[in-house]
Length: 304
Image (cartoon, rainbow, N blue to C red):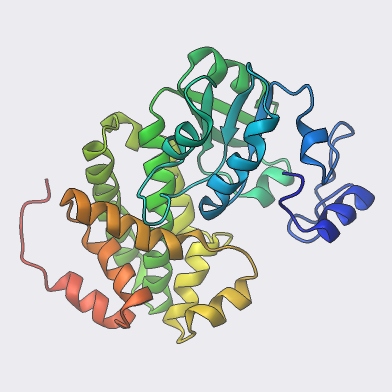
């Protein structure tokens, strides 16, 4: 979004025709330009795509609201609960923009580097307007990029929020040398936690078997292109959170998400032991090994 990014980065992107800092080698198509002027960017535009971290969503939507036309449709690729309010992105958007605009969320297992390299990728578009979802899917799909549609915005957004917390757990597990058995147990039981929270918030259970939930969870937990997984690896090596952030050099959504997910789960009385342990590691000084011992020492019970 023009006006949100640093001006020097926007100027470099306009000059180089690529985002050399974060996605080097992925050239912009001829019809894509970088512009710091929000009003110019949105003049005469019907469909708006917002791509900012969850903590910047409300501020960005507030800035663009007076610039939208009555028929503007807004979609976002933001993942995560809003900290302290516990609102999902579509709730923040509805609160800021009102009910008159069609809205959609883009989510799923899509590492930017691989998309930029033109590797085959699939993702999900969930919207409150089926026509908007279908039109977005057609506009975004290409020979190497396929978009599926959904009307379950809650399920898609819960998947995008919780998977980042679980990826930190998976990174810590691997960093401690616990192996494939532990990793798959974390992913599988993590999916149960994700579903438990999503269903309590009104999501469709089937959504959690799709790209935006199980797909994104597996991707983020198992590949080192994931910033959240790399955070877990760094913490397991003994780094502090700040040292890990300095090494990763990008926003690690799972750190704030761990606090937000805990708040929402506590408010609803939802049991999420893996996410709870990640929170305690990040905010209460629990060591990764102590967290594993706590999880393994929980009372035995039926799987389902």
